Length: 370
Image (cartoon, rainbow, N blue to C red; front, side, top):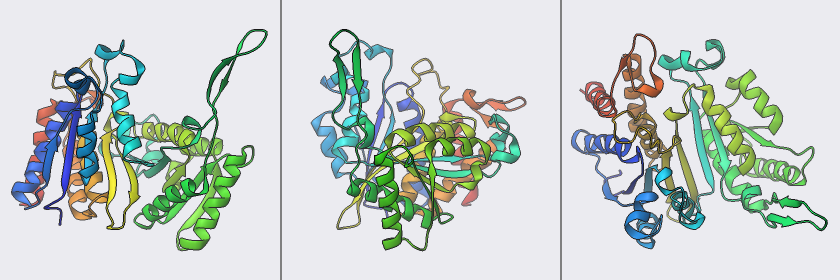
């Protein structure tokens, strides 16, 4: 199915190249053992791109990204580039990719791996079996609304302004992604806003309700205020399946949900665009963790979030559920066997390098398909 699918790999900075190398190992395994090959290109982004090309994301890189069926990104940034002008900082590379590819829906899963259950700060019975998908609107809301800025006030002092703005089409397109995701999961969507105090939140609720009634009556829809959602995430997180929210609330809630699992560095993410007339949807997949420059090049990085991002790509870009499940199962079995990178190290477990963790997961893939 995916033999002619084009992938663009952007390793980036810090530990990005190290975790990308282990993901490439899995891509190669699929080509060798599952007759599932991809057309793979690799390019620069972030600080690595700035050093060579004077920009964190070159036009040629954008051309490759726009032509790809999926983009996989490692990480960007580091203290080396702290003194650069804001317009050319490494992070601007990711922002350009998101903007030019019109990636409006950010998916952040929070999944509790049973072998890591003791790493969560919540009681095991609260988080055991946790599997939440938080969908954050990525290109609108208060982060992009106008007017914005800081101005001086007559008489002294300043005024800072940010504007929460959403349109019905923006709400509906992220809503459709949420309902479609729920249909493949447990068929429940919680729509998160502050309709009690914000007009934009009230409009969000009304538009989400109208979309549900028109197109998705088979999916259960519940509404929840953002402050209550934050409380419920730490009180009874397993009540949720898919949570959908605007940019600000989605940003906050996705980090909160991620830490329920005990390790932000274990988690993948996906940013999706619109589906075109051919059914193709632009997408970028990346681990949630940063570039971790303090351990870059030392073989200490955890590649699992990058491998899980590849699994998300199989699932959401190519509808390859069985192959995605295979990767996820291999990761779970390796963790159950006691292998750990430093970030998830536990007593009486075996600390391993980035490369050894990747090799162990590939070995488990071999065993599962023998």
